Length: 99
Figure 1 (cartoon, rainbow, N blue to C red):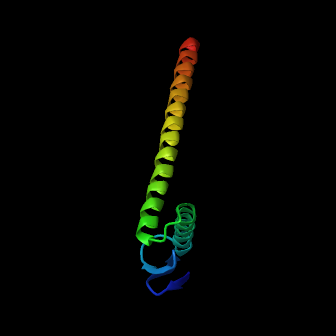
Figure 2: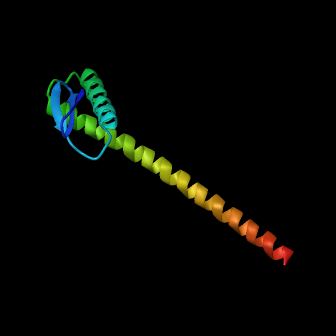
């Protein structure tokens, strides 16, 4: 994977892609490496040689990981909001006691 003029060249699952965008070139390389590793892991587990099938299975796997992490994040965000609400209410009670 190397920089090219006006973009970046990456290799994913033995295919070369020329990408452009506002993201950092090193970050794009990390994403490509992640996807390549994911596709190779899926291919080795399923013994599938069809690259389209490997890509779709990898996308489904990544989508599942994303939704599990999002659900966990949303749950933690709700807990933080509840704690902030409790702290705010406690602070309001303390401030009213001082009046």
